[in-house]
Amino acid sequence: MMRAEKTDLRRETGQRTRDGLQTAALELLAQRGQEGVTLREITDLAGANVAAVSYHFGSLKALCASAIEHALERYLDEKIRELDSLPSTATLHDVAAAFARPMVRALAAGGQDLAIMRTVARVGIDPPQGWDRLDGKFDRSRRGAVRALAPNLPGVDEEELIFRTRCAAGMLNWLALAPIGTELAAMSAEQIERQLFPVVAGAFRGDAAGR
Image (cartoon, rainbow, N blue to C red; front, side, top):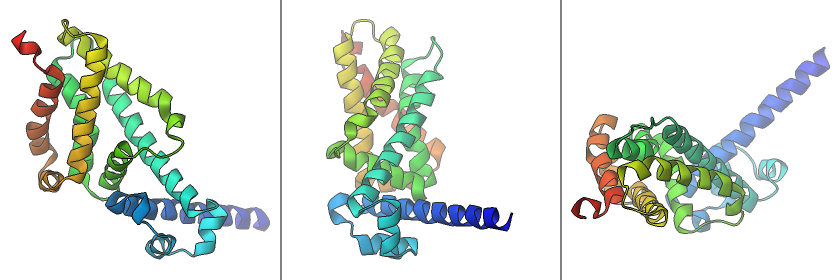
């Protein structure tokens, strides 16, 4: 019994160390990107030693890859949930809200939530190796947006809808990193929504209103 308790304690301690390293890596990746992060900075921030990185991840590169994948999966899962919850009667504003809400929550919450979004934004500009592991979730997110947009923009074909969706995603990524993102982060979630949702809806609409 005592041996089992010690094993469980070691496992919990190991998981806390692993999680702490990944959280520290995310924070630094969000600030500087992969090229600006050192092993020593991550271990100092996590309160761990260099050997822990080798034990849990194998290398600095593998730790960063794990942190990036965690950030992307969390972001995509949240966006998929928002888009999948839209009713068939969703308006263009509803779609824009669902699409942008993960970013709004991150800006309002700050901390690790915002670090995750900034990491997503950075890798969106410079995709890491292994990006294709998440192709299925990216496709599902894109299909969810297109499915919800199509009834609101009947004159726009699927290829154009995908392009507008990618442009809207790029704009949100830019917000996470640009100075204006810092300004938005000082606002409440409701204020950010009022500022951001109409802009995203406009990116989806394009010039359709003038056709």
